[in-house]
Length: 430
Length: 153
Image (cartoon, rainbow over all chains, first blue to last red; front, side):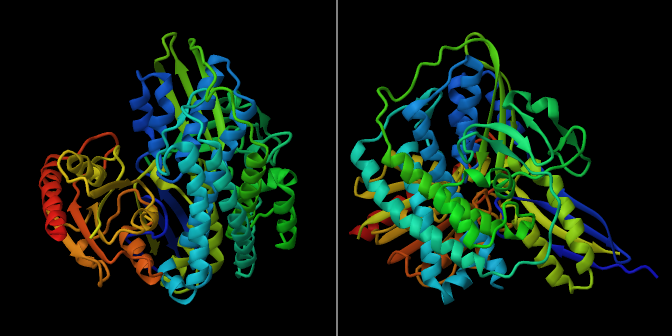
């Protein structure tokens, strides 16, 4: 006899933006999992056409309220690549500092406000704050330190406006960097406390042999620069991305799923960065990771919260290192003489690899734009996780199963607002 | 009583720009002693934004099933923002109602907090406000300015 049960959830909480997730269980077997994403950033790609190359950082920053810096950074690097300009020295260091700010604020938001409640049996951070206000205050303080970096260098906290192709419009006064360093010293302590806290959580027994994809740089844990590498042998320049990766249309989603051409889906984000770059973490972050019991590779997506905490320590230490060695650039930007060309930029958004491609004309107008956000790249992987995760848990009551499915999605900190708007979760049992 | 009006939204997401648009309208007309601010995707930024202010008005787009352009006013000083206001979905990572309740739990609410929700019609990329929401923005800018002026008398 066929068993049919339906679980319908209208709103998947604690995920940025919304989309829809359908899980179909038939006679006790997971038949299908579909993560539906309705609005990829195609609007922005269309909107960018005909605009000046110099506008790309500000326009793309509006794709996401949480990771605008990532969009700006991928955009400026792609434009500089097209124009044959390399930004180095103090300006490059300041870009790293800005990226640290975004990682700190984004990771703190996800760890404390969105992800931790799952592990503590709380429905939301509001419940958590009732019992542990000091913990939530610590998360807010940490996040604020990240915001402070973005506000100082980006000109404002949300949708920063100080980033331009070639550097920045203005470099803030030196005394403001000093104040920032004092705030980051406290943030670093908070980041260590965060790691100690999340390490105490219980994690479901769930390991997946992912193909991890991230940037790798010879000297640095990657933010802005590096080759695109994978745990299964990919090692390419950002310029060669489209030769190895493709976007595939899937029927249930208007968004495109990303695949490695010869073998399918892959995993981007903190777990991937960590697996491919843990040797490049700051000394304090590396030691903290060891203390937290992390091996060099972590394949349990639920433990991504631990890796985010390690990366937050790294971002605080890296920001402090940049500030300690800060040289004021002679000019806030280098000139980027425009030429007709195609440029590619890949940077590490908090959620993973963010790839931009632009073709610009001799007058600097954008002829085409292609933006591949991390959440699009992870979509098929999230679906696969759910298939694997649900199967041994089918006996769970619907509400528990649904909650655990939501958790499995939240592991990815999916910024669905980068690629869509509303997310609804439906579990159908037949 | 120091007044502050905060508009929440993304200028590139259709009616989600409502909060930003109300602030833009108020900049043309409001007295200098009323502070105006905008917040993008991060509702937790409200905590610092309203720090030190005593009377705060927050404006956001909402989805409650009402007719587009419907304006609802809710005094959140003592009570949780109720379901009758629907949800302030938009593209914010952390729902406005959740952010307010978190602030309340942590003792971070201003002395007085008024939430204005305007029912949105669509959140398409790149479009401006829909006609009914734009009309509501015009009216709401005046209404809030009046309320701020009255409070200060």
